[in-house]
Image 1 (cartoon, rainbow, N blue to C red):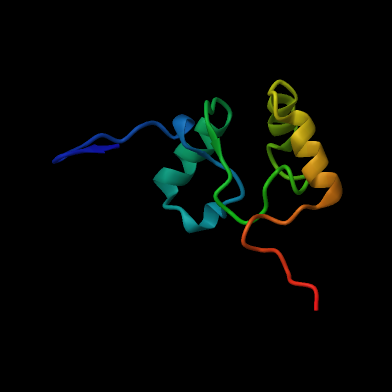
Image 2 (image 1 turned 30 degrees about the vertical axis):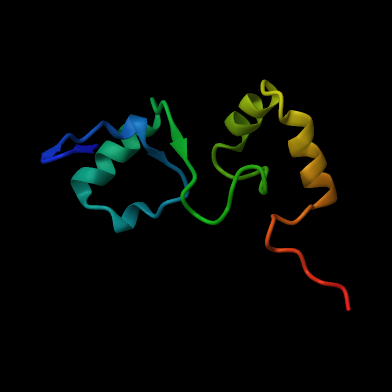
Length: 94
């Protein structure tokens, strides 16, 4: 976290990455990332695959558990079922 000239590094448990290649991390960072993975408070899906798209994806069980508790759950299911494209991605029919 950066505020003006001050930088404060937060624990990785607050920035839990999913679907990263641990071989791309330094040994020190890799050990910390793997240890913090067990106690993460926030999960960030930074890669292309998202748990709402791939039910076998790491963290998908947690994602769907939380999704069920939101007022948007039915909308998520509807969108997934009918595969509605995101705005701007519509294809014109000619």
